[in-house]
Length: 348
Ligand code: DAH
Image (cartoon, rainbow, N blue to C red; front, side, top):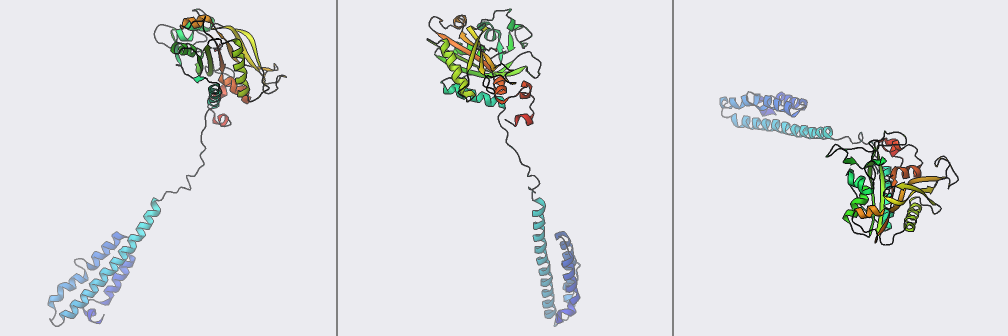
């Protein structure tokens, strides 16, 4: 830098080089750049002074100054590129999501045990040619009681059992106490032959404890056609019980019972799936497990919905779904179905 030396001392370039290396950010570099090539910088001053030089010295000085200017500009340019690259790299690092920390295993949920049992029962009945129907959970007196032959004053209507809804006339609207009203709704809506099952939630005025729950589930079945007999009822229930418990040795037992909407009526029990009928803890040593009630649809009920009992007969039954699940999985508290404790539910 012999010629330029006089114009711009070599130290200036060295100094600039050091300052450029020391600038750690693009902002700091811009400040340094102003210092070395902006207005008031040594270079700018020298450019100003060119006119004072002897004309013979000007070309060499101009060339030296131009070279120095270019070198300084080049230093800044390359440092700027370096800093920009470094910043882009740290920005990538800073914005990166650390997925390794969030990697807790997530288990999938599954259907509630009662829903599983319900779906299974639906499948069994659909396999026998039944249709699945539904009715409202808030019912009127006609469907829940009256059309089922339950005259006013019948014990099943007492305040103790029924949860009434404050709607319309007093005690005319209620949470259904069983799924049997769906029988009535179905017969009102369809002509025989009728083969339906109606699963769903039912409500009674009970306090939740190990064996009682104010909310529970039932499945209702109704078959109405010409020539249906008690033998059809027995055969259907037996087929269903063998499939449900997946056991050909299951036996069914019918004992006389009373329901206002069936005549004759029976209580249905199946032989205990745990002891095969010998007697054990699950069946309270009886050898039998009660599932629900059944019977031949009372002619009065048929008449009430406009079906001629001289032409058609039918059978019906209703079981508790929790009861079936309890028997099958040896669960001794109905309460556990409604507690929502995942430790319990996840087992099934
Ligand atoms: N509804 C009865 C109850 O909740 C069960 C029942 C009994 C349903 C006899 C029926 C039947 O369809 O025929 O206990």
